[in-house]
Length: 237
Image (tube, rainbow, N blue to C red; front, top):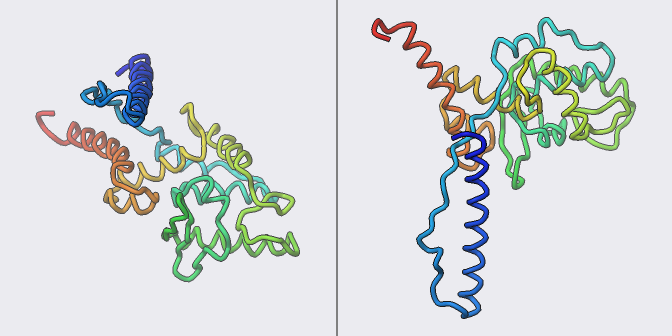
């Protein structure tokens, strides 16, 4: 479906929804006894395939790119590491507190949508990076009135615009994709682990989705990878 057709379908869906609500209101008021919209079905929209950064490009994000050695450089590097290695949302990253990190078990507790908590495993290397950052933070800022792990140069928690600008700044250096937001790193995380064999239900738990339907968009890349393998390996391909 072309973009123009997709927009038309969205507009039609909105109009159908408005009409259904209107006729339900008339039924409730006793003006009519039956809605003429009962048999009207809304057109289905195709699922959007999420944008993501290629694995080879993501590898360039930390090597050879060098981050500044000042406090903001260290913060930017850790922000990007956490987003890509955990797939958490921007708001979840900002709200991540030191008390949510289990240093010995290499997990973080994330408070997601609807105040639902989930545990996410992290690598020993990321645990060490977070521990080092936390230690340096206590040396740079004598006392802070909050427990947020990530802070700006004045010791204040990061805000959404800061995080967005950080991500865009570095993704611009490694990829030409149009969208360069923190959510792209979430999509990249999910796509890459799906391509490397992670089962769908595990990805669902890691992302904090309420149902598998929201997670199934990441299977498209696995199928594309299978097609590529098939073409290279099958004599009749």
